[in-house]
Each structure stands twice: as C-alpha cells, then as structure tokens.
Figure (tube, rainbow, N blue to C red):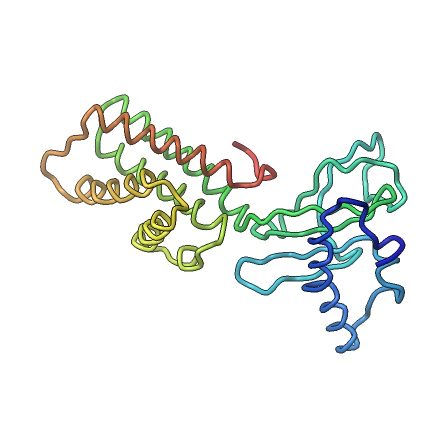
Length: 258
C-alpha cells in the first residue's frame, strides 16, 4: 500500500495487513461483484476511514468512509462536527455509537496526515453495562437487608446481583450465546462452571452463584426457619463486591455510569 494508505512506522503493521487481507479487500471485491456503488477507484489512497463491526451473533460488517459510525474525543477547540483528514488534531479516543453498543470493532481513520487504528473486542458492552447498573441496585438492597439481618431478602437480592454480574463475565469476552438467549438460571450456572474449569473466572465467583441459587430456593419457598450466619453475610458480600470490580474491569468505559 502506498501513499495515504501506508501505515506509519511501528503502527500495528501485522494488524494492518490482516485487516486488508481478511476483511477490507474481500468486502471491496464483494461490492464489485454485485455491482454495488463502490468507493473512489484509487483504493486505498482516497479512503479516509474503514471499520470492521464485530457483531456477537452475525458476520462482521465492513464500512468505508461516510459509512463509518463512531464518536471521537480530540483536542480540537471550539468547532464541533466531523473531522477532516487534513486537520491537525490529536485523537484521544474513539468509541462506537449506541447503534452498535453490543459490538466489538476495529476502526481505521486517516487524520492529521496519518492513519490511526482503534479497536475494542468487548462484546455485549451496552447490555453488560446495563447489567452492572442493575446489579449495583440489587447489591445495595442486599447490603441493607444484611444490616437489618433479614436473610430472605438478603439472599434473593444478592443472588440477582451475582447472576447479573456472572452474565457480564460470560458475555463480554468470547460470548456464550446460550447464556445470551436463555432466561434459565441453570444456563448461567452451567456456563460459569465451564469457565471456571477453563480458568477464565475465579472459583469463588462460581461457588457464590451456586450457593445463593440453592439458598434462594429455601428463602423463597421454605416456610421453616431460615438463617444466614454473620460470617456468611460478610463473605457473600465481599465476593459479590469482587465480582462487581471484575465486571467493571471488562466492560469498556464508554458505558457510564459506574
């Protein structure tokens, strides 16, 4: 690749080559074969942006130039709006719009006289962020129940929080489609056990989810005495807090509030 299309020295050369070989060139050939409106003929010199959208359940979607959707933070002062390829600005970050909230991406842009590559391979980012917000609410309620030593609402709310956080671990990286589509508790528990055996999630997270699931049945459907020890109140909450920290660490920061 020559001219504008040539990456600057030391700039992800392997990724650059793979992008063209695996995604961008095949997409151009596909469009040509179908007689679709294409791009400027002197590719890549007249291309100023390209994007690979990684859908969790569908084939990758390839975009060029004005098809690219993203929000960039730059050091530009004063004038909002689209960037021009010749603008002398520093791009600080690039994030997908809400329309692609659950997708990963690789995005190339030509700005300030050079190509820049941005990528994020987190899947289900928007869904996971919403799950984190909901989990924090259930976790706060569980904490209040623990302070009042009300074991039944404690277990119920803590289980809901922990299950939501477990789903974040299962969906954000190498997403489990069985979990994404299923509404059954057993699907989440089973997937967590598989991830634990593979070393992808801490054993304590899986054990807490399983323990709370069993206790939840007793708390909700057994009219007999139901007790949670002081030690378990503390241990369960500590592990749930660890799960919350882990969940926040794997979800891209463009999804507030945390």
